[in-house]
Image (cartoon, rainbow, N blue to C red; front, side, top):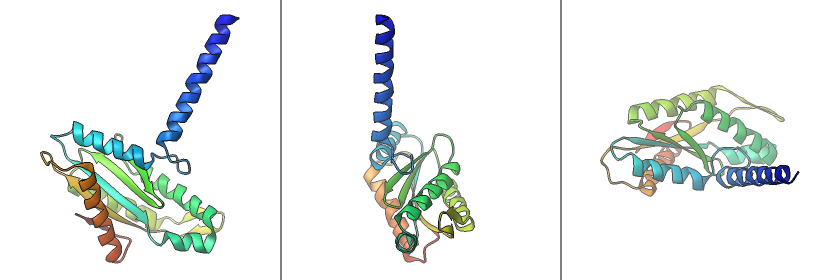
Length: 184
């Protein structure tokens, strides 16, 4: 009985540690990686892939505040979850997806060159724009803007500089009419 008790206690501790680790690394609403974890993955990819390209895509939902204002925050949460599914199904195995903040997401695509990253962003953009999100308030049309940046092999750029370039490209997409892909 003592051995079983020790085994059971060990099982509970391990399960609790796994749950805590998951909660520490993931966004609780969407279930994807949180900002801290996705940045760590990017840093790790940059450090470990000096001879390969790394692309990142930053994206956010156009006019998301209007959705929240018109339909309420719970419907906004439904939209965030649906968009997260669109993003997740559009990535390759080995790519990473994280919530950067609010309605902004970042994708890390190791070994991906610019034309392929632009293709991924455009495919997601079309999927989101062409697929109304089914919510408790009815179907809602959503669009997204995308900023793409690629670190070429051999560059001495850090994660912050790469994120900054993708963010500038995202703002360029927003300033040029939204629902589009730009790169820097």
